[in-house]
Image 1: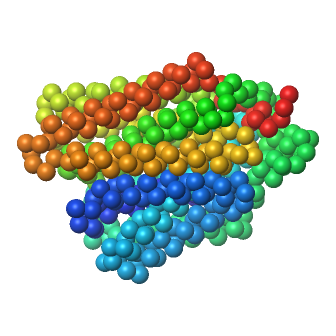
Image 2: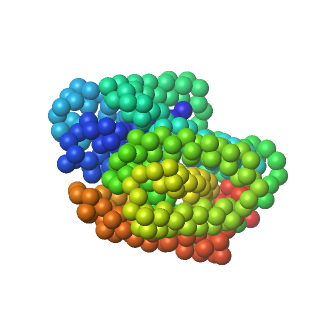
Image 3: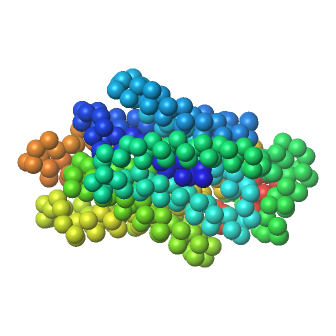
Length: 407
């Protein structure tokens, strides 16, 4: 339910741009303001996650979404209300990920932790698709109502269920107690004797690498899901988010259920960031060679981009909560996400503001410029993945107690 809330709220800004709810002169804000605000929301949520608990932090972020959408509904023609709404919903949507990922990593046995981290996050992709279906079907008159209904109902239901049915993380509650309490807490979660993680680099270095691959993944997600369809291939502006949402959900669930436990985290990271870079080069080369702005082959090349987008998202979802100690997991994850969303938001804002073809003659130069920047970003992600492969440590199927219990 938390990721359903995230998926709808995360699409809030792009819906306004793609369905022309706001003037085109503000489209770059719709495609970036919420994500930048989300970075600050992640920072706030991270500290709440560590000091107030995983459960309480999630309930607060869900309530912020309700408040944010209520502000817009109260003054739908007021520019200040729209911006405030973007900021609140963006902060809460991105902020909610930190307690969700922390809670999953601390409540699922090591054997199945990776499966759940990948599968659960993909319910967000399903809601991304649901929000855009009315526009794809030509039902723009009910586009707003569908988005508003989902934005209000999802967090309200999550609040009710979370308040009455969700318990706090056992390892988090034990983290500041005696070493024996921490050991017993992790044994209760893991349910069986499993090897502990053995960190091989400092926590700040882990944070730097997680942040770096996160920025790359986020640029890929936002640029491919929302921006290129809207900016360059307008015929697909509503098609791509729907295809992407369902494609990522299906691929993510298949990957999460059948393959995560069979491949090491290091190999998965290389596969994800390597495929992301290669697939983007293929799309760029095709458009540069043919000048195509529509057609089934172009749509197919855009669609397969989501293979890399989903795998990198899955890798992030697993590594972020798995590489940090319990007592500071929320803060490190949120600090990474703060930098990820702000920097990725700025990158996509600059790309969509300065590389926007206002005439057909500008299409190819602008597409080449932006594609070159994106290709460099993806290459950085691949290099970071290679570094993690050789210098990082394995977390797949291992108990996170290794962060908290000194051997």
